[in-house]
Image (cartoon, rainbow, N blue to C red; front, side):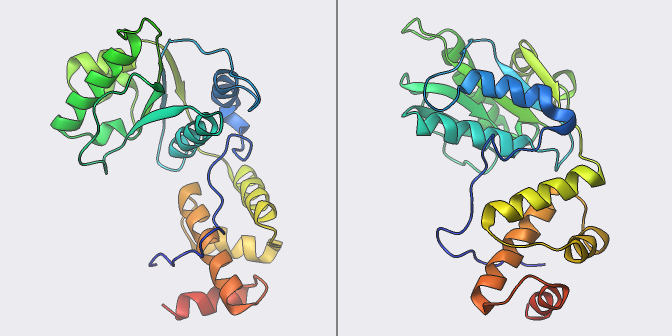
Length: 232
């Protein structure tokens, strides 16, 4: 299924408030404590945090949500993922360094990540910064250079679990409500039974369906979902 372009302003970005904790509530509360309530900074410790789990467990959602929360507080953040081909130099003004999908880093990206990590934890300014990272494997099993791998496992480590079907349904309902659209049980059954149950894939499908419904000015139904697929 090709990805449909979303209308500008319709897509809602990841937030901590819209993350369904479920079996991952401990990791969610840890991040909320660090980021704060949006009005004042949280209890920011320099101890790094590493999240790991299978694809679709919510790692990237949480990292992007933390980045947005910090930006909303006026802070700047260093961000690195495998798609960043030319990462910037470490910036002393960053409040945090966020490293996504570290298991996919190239040799050059590993060098950048290590440099950022060292500068964040032991900055020249004397004010430690937080390092938040995520990957598909526990730190000890990451296919990375030894010095980076050991540092990623130094602080708080949380394994994220995939949601069961009840939780996936709750997330789909929550996301639909956030967009102001009605997602009936029959449509949800169709989505869960005919498509990948990976939460990331389901969210992408909901994005596409929401955009298609808006363009066609129709309610979200199974016929609409079939029409969207046939139009590709």
